Image 1 (cartoon, one colour):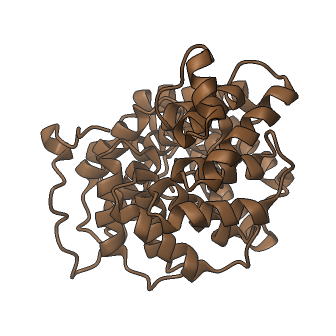
Image 2 (cartoon, one colour; image 1 turned 30 degrees about the horizontal axis):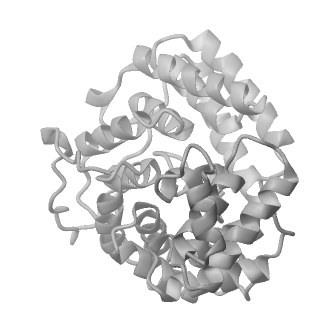
Length: 366
């Protein structure tokens, strides 16, 4: 799901250096009303290894002192603590209020957090257009997760007019900063020729770049699907696809103990592309069984997917691999400037082909 807030574990990494020890000097400065000292002391207590609730509550209290003095990062972190219920009682209304205070001061991270709360209607009345406005403000400051979110909104026409060409520009900005979600979405636009010129080479390159983000298991699934089912058979690599699909399934099982019907379907396609039709049949039957049991899929979507899965099963039974049908790309699409992924570029500091994005459980932009 879209990450609604910044988990406490990420606070330390995002907001600067936290002293290894709570020294007397830091404590004295905090006691004397220094907002930065209060913020740093609060961070240390909140993000410490201890599960001591008292310590976390003390940390939240120090962060609140700094926030009340107008410390923008403290405001944002305090909002996050209220979202997570860390050191304070969970309260999305207060979370939204503190995020808004920081967002109004121009803090990009807070603007994104506020956008996500408006998207989900948590602590505020749900409003896609306000969410889009805050996402755009954060994205305009170069915040990669916000750029990915704003791009997604432009693709879907969610709170802002649909514009895949503009979405591609924002996805590229985010992708060049290493955001895996944006890399996958940009690859998909190239695959369909939506908003950009159809380009399977760039599609593959961006999926491979996304796979470098080790925690992005869906990137592995997407790349395996591409290598198995691309309409251009020059991009087929069955053996590699099997290996990547297997790694994705293994990772999900290790992390959640589950099997996803989308990934099992991809594994079947990879096996068929590699000429292992008997195994492909078994995996495709498994994907059908999992789809029937998946309560998160609507009846309408399940009916459509069942038909697609069964059609692929018939192909594998007949010892034929599956390939996506080529899409009709937009005739007016312009080349995406500054995308030099094929030249080994895009190394600035810091929904998959053939399957609708709505099928994915991971839409995290962070």
